[in-house]
Length: 243
Image 1: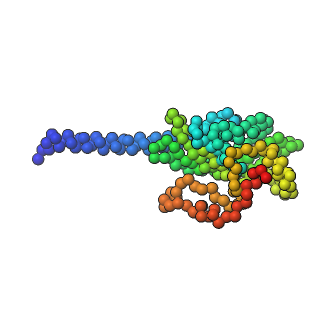
Image 2: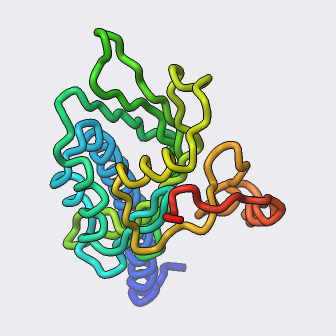
Image 3: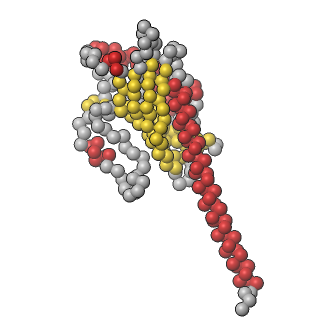
C-alpha cells in the first residue's frame, strides 16, 4: 500500500526534527569542549603571569562582577580591588624574583547553561629570590586550587580563586630553629597581609585538611567523604592572623 502524501510529509517532518535535535546536541557538546579549553587556557595564563608577578595582567583575568574574590592561606580578599590589593604587595619585585606554579591535573565542571564553571587544579612549583653567593635557595610549594569561572561577553574569566597551600618549604631552613613569637609577628608584618575576611584555621600541611571538592564522585555520583573527614580534625588557629 502506497503511503499517502500526508504520511510521507509527516515522516519527513519527524526526520527533520530528529536531525535538528541531534545537531543541537552535537553543537552543545562542541561548545562545551571549546569552553573547557578556554578555561584551561585562562588558568594556564594565570600561572604564567604569576611567574613574574605581573599584577595588571593577573587582575585582568578576573571578571567584572560583585562576587569576585580570592582566598589564600591568610583569608579572603573581596572584589577586584581586593584581588589587586593582594597582588600589589609584590608589584615591585626584583628581576631575580621567580614564582613558578604549574597549573596541572584539572577537573572542570560546566554549568548546565554553559555560563559558569568550576575547576580543581594542582599547583606545584618554586619561588626563588636573589641568589646568595651565586647559590639559588628556592622555596618549594604544593597547592590545590578550587576555582569558579564566569563567561562574560563570550569570554571566560575568573570569578573566584581559592588556594589551599599544602606545603611550602625551603631546604636550607629545614633544620633552622623555630622563630620566636616576635619574629613571627615581624614576618606577618613584612608580608603585608590584609584580607577582608581572615581565615579561622590553619589548613596547611600537616593539618590533614582536604579542601572540599566541587564535584561528586565521577563513577558513583555520590558526595565524597572529605567533609566528614575534616570534621574529625583538630585544626590550629590561623597562624597569619594578627594577635
